[in-house]
Amino acid sequence: MPDMDIQSVLGFDDADLAANRLGQSTQKQKTMLAEKAKSHKSFNTIIGVVIALIFGGALLTGLGAPILATIGGSLLESGKVTTGALISLIPMLCMALFFLVIFGGILIVILRAIFASANRKVDTTVRRVEGTVNFVWVERRERNAAKTGPMYRTVRVLEMRIGGETFNAQHELPSVINQGEEWVFYYTSHPFKFLSAEQVK
Image 1 (cartoon, rainbow, N blue to C red):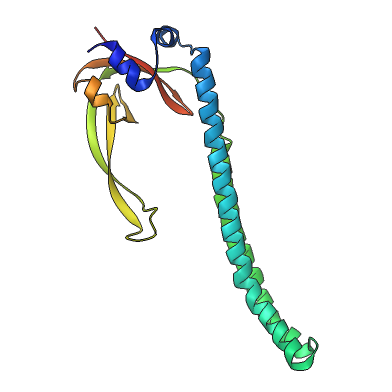
Image 2 (image 1 turned 60 degrees about the vertical axis):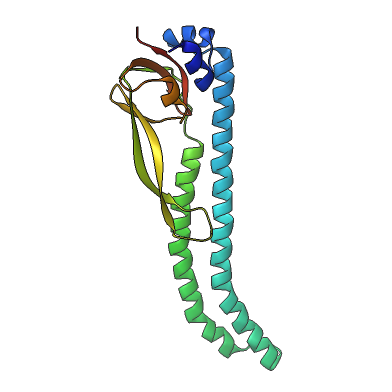
């Protein structure tokens, strides 16, 4: 099949392919990878902040509401915060502190994982894989983003297996690459991107 077909699908030209063969990337590819890495970092950072706000807000509301209700009730009854009201808060405060430590620890672990992913070192080394192309449809379970329906749903994903490596494949690839053909793909690992490809003649 003409190389121009694969070029249009992956978005590269002859100059990109020539540089990739030498283990290098063109300035155009470097710019594109930098933008992709920046977008990935921004997305993960935003997700981390949103989770922190939701988790923290829910935690403070759940723990703070009973305490405020007790103090408010005491004020309404006697016009001041009584000793009895303060004493009744002790078990509540102990429980609040316990849950604050537990859920605070969980939140820290989650946020560390998210921000570690966001700050993962960019690796734009040009990698090469060669072999027989095998396209396989696989089923995966993923979280359902919709507010209705089951929590998880099963989706079909197209994988391309080549040279001992497995990649998520664009749906257009089988239209320009025949099953069983020998190909070379050039790519980066983080952010992941197919830079170029060529059929082994």
